Image 1 (spheres, rainbow, N blue to C red):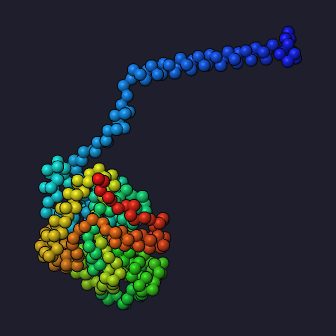
Image 2: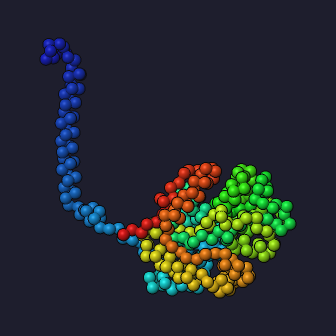
Image 3: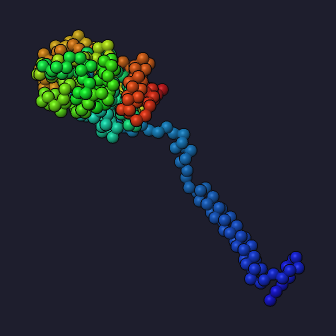
Length: 351
């Protein structure tokens, strides 16, 4: 059966039927949508909403019952641990202290990166490598420069007489540690490029074994390992950090911990400053206090204490500028994968 369309042409029945069904479907959909919208609004009106209060109320700072502190073989933090002042300070806040020792700064900051510690201390290079790797660290404070506390050592009977003689030689060091920058600067001052030596990356204990067994030609190391090696092996100092590097000790924290617990950061730094004030002119007392903890003879530790400077302070612009120079140097050498802005990792207490 054919019918006439409005234009006067015949229109198939099935086509006309489909068009009618389509129009009806639109009306049904509109009706269902209206009913659904009304039902949704009715439910919303009957359901309590916390959105306004949650957006306006400040987020509660999670309670902290323990501060996890990472430390190395030597430094103000070791004295702090030995004297127990931090535990007494935090006890009134209902907070205990958990201590974890690490062989070097890179290992300590890896623990901070994975959330195993909240606070720790390292030399100048480890934070650069850690920041380049995306670790959520912040610089909190630093000790004064102590360039004489690290050195490049050679065996007492080694034919190597100057840094220039290291060309083509095997040099042991803890990769990413403070002595990494010392080696770079010493080589540059001697007219050598970093790729003109054979770096052998070893933690301090393995580095000493390799050095004593003659498997490497030189060892770049920091105190107290430096002092202990001098005593045990009569190693010669090829060069120390004087006129080459600052060799500052930094106090670093996990960013979220620092932001959420500024009171604990303040307590940590104040207790560190108290220790520094006590230790500055007491190298013998420091050595006697730390000798049982470190397993190093008092005369060695006394020498180590005399080579170090004390006086923790919050991070200043000149220190940031120096760290930026270290970061730029490592980037230019291809030792870190990207250019860094050190200032982005400097902690600023929130008002």
